[in-house]
Structure formats: structure tokens, C-alpha cells
Image (cartoon, rainbow, N blue to C red; front, side, top):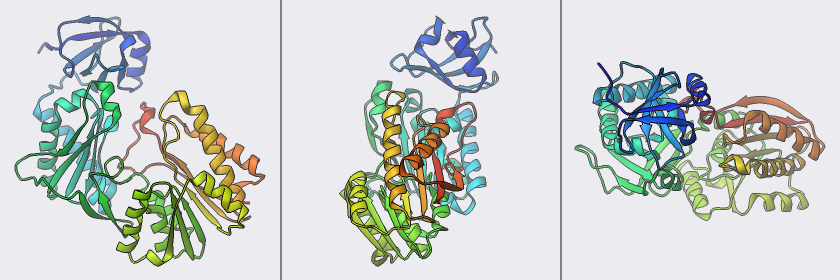
Length: 406
């Protein structure tokens, strides 16, 4: 059956990117358009020779003009299509997360071919963020399908909360949108808190006011890896946020843990989490700028033998990558200088604008600055509920390393 979608012809450069698996077509890469459409519609993408390359959401307000969602000529973008996609995403998480399926990312944007959509599961609550117009126009359908397909897997969903409050929505011509999703069988008006368990540790997740969707699930197994080194050690957890690395270290038998963050609200949540797990006496929470804290600690004769660096993204664009490099280098240099020979360092970056090879070069530079050598224990990435889709480097964002300073 002949497709009835408008057609966008793209440059050879865009064609090569699409054939390698990248789903984005930028505005300047479209050389011709046929047919009529409304922003948010599905359009076909064609090569300069008229060969079909895929179909995706169009938005003239966005720098990313088309977000490709299918390369299958037989797809019809009806409810059955999106139900298959939702079911596939949920069953993938059930397979790779096992017992951790109760608190994990269910949909990870382009990696699941849902461009601009993030959905996290916190027990019987789903928290969602919608950042693209195409997904925004179909979000009510997607939310309903999520509930229905979850129930087929024996998962009861009590509520879905939309956290679409990112300024990135403005780049899609969208206003911010937050609130409980109203669907039959879903509750609304809840207090925004739910208790989850990760690595045997309980957390009070604030999915209304917490950062992003309320909790950073991508470090789940990195926290376990870090905890394996913590027994009997004096641990400093920098940028602790709601305390996850600190709690894992304390639970693993650290002699003492100091957790630092600049946000008073985050530290209050971290203290609640420590109390939930009976660890309040093992962790000293301190508010302050981590850069200044490390400088002051060096002059005070600090004796930590394990430092964890989990900073926020120092760069969210290529334009600030050089500045971020300097920030990462400085924070790692200070940590390395504080550690004794034989001490341990966990360090990471959550920005895809700081690629793995450049992050590793930064670590080499920081070690040279600190006059130390690094013995690598592990190099890790995000948990598999945040899958890396080859051909889409934006999905490969989290770098995590464990070192011994020698």
C-alpha cells in the first residue's frame, strides 16, 4: 500500500548517518520536501536518489527536524505499532534487570526508538519526561499502553507522573508540563514519594520535586562495584546528591563516610535515606562546594583513603566541552592529591559531550598534575536498563572508573 506521508529528501551526509543507525535529521540536511504536514506528524525520509531511508516525527521548530522511529517499510504507525514498541521495551528490562525490574528505566529515548521519551519505574509509580513534539502528541496513548503492557507482566501501576519540566522542551516549541496522568485505574493527587529498594538499600524517591524523574538509576551497579572496596575504609563521597554512593559504602562496612553536596535539599533527602536504613550514625553529611571542600581538606590533613567523585554533567553541549575538561581535571587532581598511596578513587562523567577517550586523557593529565600513578581496577558504564544503541553515540554517556593510587 502506498504511503500517504509527506516526503523529505536529505543530503548524502544525512543519508550516511541514517544508514549507520543515527536517527536524527537536521534542518539544514533537508534539500526538498513534498506533500503537506503539521509539526509532530510522521514523514518519510528519502535519499537524493529517492531511496526510502526511514520514517519519523517532523518538527520545523526544532534544530533536529526529523527524528526517525522506523526503518521498516511495512510499519503503520497505529496503536498496534506503539504497543509492540512498549511491550518490547518492558520485556527487555524484565530480561536484563531480573530482580531489579521494580526500580529501573523502562524507556530510554532513542535507544528504545521513542525519541525524547524517558520513563522510569519506581515500584508501582512511573515517572515520565517527554522532550519531543512527536512523543508529546502521542503521550496519552503511550502512557495507557505502558499501564496495559505492564499489567500483562504482572506489574500493577498505581500512578504515572509526568515530569516534563526541562527547558529543552522550549527548543521543540513545547511548554513545560507536569502532573499526574489521568487514566482509568490510575491514582492522582499522591504526595510524590515512594520507597524503592536498590542493592538492598531503601530510598525515599521524590518523583515530583527530585532532579530529573526523582532518582538516578543508571549508577545502580556502579554503586555495587564501588561498595566492594569500602569495607574498613574512610570514605569521602563528593557530590553525594541523595546519598546513594555514601549509603552503599556505609552498608558495605566502611569505617566512616563523609558525604558532601552543595544542595541543602539534596542533603535533607540523603539524611532521610540514611535514617531509612539505620545508617545515620555512620555518615557525616556536609553542605558545601566540593572544589572548595577538597582544597580546605588538603590543608586540614584529611585522612580519607577512598574518594568517590560523581559530579553532575560539567557540560551539556560541545561548546563548553573544553571548560568541562578543565573542571574534571581539577576535581580529579585534588582528589588524587588527597589520597594516600594505596588509596582508592571512583570517578565518573555523565555527559556524552565528554567521550570516553577524552575523559581518560583527562584522568592521565590529572594524575600527572598530582604526581601519582593510577592502577585501573574497573572501567564501567551505565546499567543495562539504559542501553547503548550502536550508531547513536548520545546513548553512550556514563563513564565510571575505579582506580588505586600507586
